[in-house]
Image (cartoon, rainbow, N blue to C red; front, side):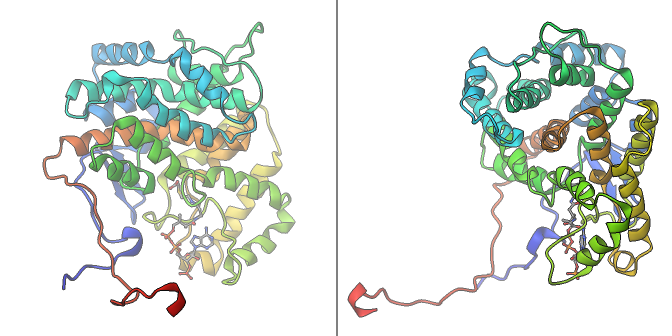
Length: 392
Ligand code: CMC
């Protein structure tokens, strides 16, 4: 009989070769195409990071302008898609709407479905990077019963997203540059993270030859879970539930209790075992945004800081190497910006889209890739004969 390595959760299986993102979990290091996340978060911007992830090098000025122009040309969604949105219940979670609408892009953009044509693959990539903010903002507007706001292509990528979320027709809305910078940083920090669950899902879906829109919809579905991208929503809701610092010990005790399924959301990571470098940048950004917005004594931030302090001194968290991850602080920033918690994971999704599509493109171009087809250790019944119902 065949012998297979049993590796639940793929903790020690490399399913592909990749030249996109490097993580050193012990050192707390994250590199996109070799560049450290801290430098990119400080000096780059999201669309430049998109170019880097997709094409492997930082763009020169002309390449950047050209790329920006191409993305900007594709920010609108087909008018018929508006009707598709309207089919959802008005109180749908924006992630539910996004899974459906992004999957439905396969039915709208027939000229970028042929995965064997490199040009079509590139157009699909540009389309998704361009349209995901529009779709996320539309899902949000729909969920709160407001009319959709068209993309404003004179704005940069993150400002345009904020505009589509917060502008109201017939009223002036100017995007605050502080918020736009913070949003851009959130997008950069989430842009890629090698073979996490949703990226592996995109690759697995793509390995069968499925079209890129279907693959990204699969990634969005996987991201939604609270152990993955859904953690940012779950984390802020947890911080609110804790409410005041005096209740922290109660929640720490619950997290340690083996009989209680409760986990401290925003803590722990499969790969990072000392700290999550994204969390460090996110924490600084949270401080900066709240300071610049004049928000002092934010109770959620106070609970977060105290929870972090107590957990980091606790033997349970030390021995299990549990540190705050990227989702621990991102929610505080998004909350301060005025986003409801239901929008946190859609923002993660639109930011990760470039990572998913870069990994999908890398996979399609890799001649060693085969259809993803894990094996199993069968633990069920051995051979037995069927019995008629009266004989059972
Ligand atoms: N709170 C309390 N205990 C925890 C936590 C937590 N957040 N995370 C892990 N543990 C414990 C867990 O109970 C287990 O204990 P034991 O060995 O006694 O059974 C041990 O630590 C190892 O946990 P694991 O679940 O085997 O580790 P994993 O690598 O499979 O899971 C994780 C990683 C991120 C899913 C997990 O730490 C978790 O559920 N964290 C909370 C959710 C979260 O914040 N997710 C966001 C991850 S970062 C962004 C992203 O990827 O989207």
